[in-house]
Structure formats: structure tokens, C-alpha cells
Image: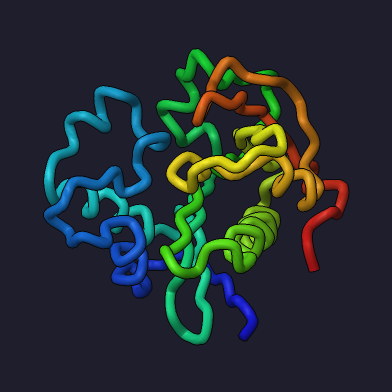
Length: 199
């Protein structure tokens, strides 16, 4: 079956919750707000405040991410949005703002266990690129890890890999001082104005 990617709108919030808090709404989870908030804002959000904050983002005209479905079942999530709205990214000491280009950022992937290594993350990225372009983004930025050809635990792959982004047309801009699983994270970009969005 083909993978279908759609915006994470308010009517699909139940599916967002199923992916981001699989142990239930009361279990600890970041609700994909880590990069969107400053450190103090994130720490102030407790309990039900986190899903409520993400739900409010899903209610806006531009969704905070996209969802992947396989045979009608939700199997993946990708978070993205204007970097200017991502408090922690704006202040990050390890992932620099390299210039004044108004970029959108792809910050997180979640693929449901049992559906990994089936192209879900790549489909999510294609969907995220198309969604960003549809909503006026000119440049899309990402911060994946370079696995250096070795296997890395899936727990560390939520930011994606350089190879996946390169296959989608992204180019490396700068090696950041950020790391995941002991591997370097790169700032990469895709120029959407150049018309390189997936078909």
C-alpha cells in the first residue's frame, strides 16, 4: 500500500497523540514542543498543558507537522514550521542561525514501531517539503545526524539522517557543534524557490 501524508490538523489530533504519547496522555512526553519553546517555557508546561499547547497549534491555519498513513493507519509524524517560531532553535548554541534567510525547519520524525525501514520517514519528508512550499516557505532547513555509514539506534534518529535529506535534495551548509548518538549534526538546506520539491 502507498503511504499517504497529510497535515496534522485539529481533527487528526487523536492520531498525533497516538504517535507522540503512545503510553497515554498522562505519561511523560515532550509532545514535540522541545524546539518550539524556549527552555523555560518548555519546563513550565506540565501535565495536560503540553498536549493542549500542541492541539492549539494544530488548530491554526498552518499545521505544526504532517502525518503519514499506511492502509488507513497512522504510522508517522514529522514536525516543521518557521524557525522564527521555534524558541529553542532561535537561541540554540549548538545549531547556529547562519544568516537572515527566513527559513522553515524540519525538527522531528516519529515512526511507529513495526513500520520502520519501510520508507515512512522519507515519505514524511517529501510531504513536509510539499507542505512547506504550499505555505510559502522559500528555504527549508534541517539538522540531521551523519551516521558515517554505521548503524545507529532508532532512538537517536528522530532528527533524520544526512543521507535521507541528501536524497531529497538538501545540501550541507555547516557542521554544527550539536551531536546525537555521538555523531555530528549538520545544518542542511533545500532551496524551495528553485523548484526542487518532490512530485
